[in-house]
Image (cartoon, rainbow, N blue to C red):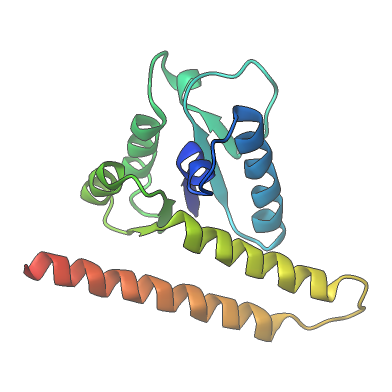
Length: 162
């Protein structure tokens, strides 16, 4: 499960981003991830009176004035049995989330965007082909993700030793 600090991801692109751009980015990335079999939640600050898919959350819908960070903390603390990859550069949020969730891994937004780009590229390469066996490709991608998680665990252990 990917839990994405939506504005943090959008701002990590290096430019000022409006709500509509951040929302469109969330929709596009979600489509790629969901088609590839991944679960994802994009969490925005505030409240939206527009209909939106279930994988897009607005923190103000749960409790008026709640921040996206608080929504994420509540979510990860109530899903401790799941392995969660938190997408954010917010160190404070990352530290708090790690504190409440034993199987949480923090992924830099740029690494996440590269991961999704690879998913999209592999999906495009198979469009229009019949009876394609994607098992090897999926296994490669899972190995890449496992390698990334292993490297995060090593970093986590090194930090604990200090």
